[in-house]
Length: 128
Image (cartoon, rainbow, N blue to C red):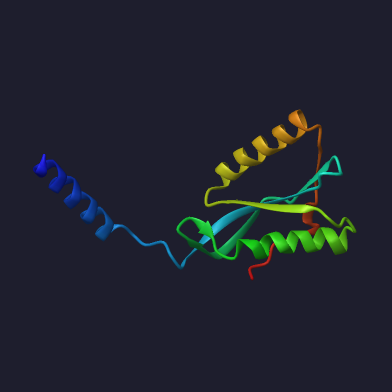
């Protein structure tokens, strides 16, 4: 029993020692924004956008709240649609984000009766 424990402990330590730390590593991500309101049956989607040089900290998007604020402010001031909730989705692989987009659209359309509209090229995310 002690030998098994020591082997597992050694394997864990070796794995942790050689694991690559992704903190503060700039990478390319694909991002999608969705703006919804509980009092409106229209959900606004941004186009999937590629952002280069974005920092991921333990697989979480650094400064993700700023990207959500960008979409929220755009909907507030440019589209004159205040009080909407903005949600940001991101993936390092485009195919994964496209699958996620399809699931979100299907759920909104089928379960909640929401119409999906795209903002098109009018909105672009900017790195903070």
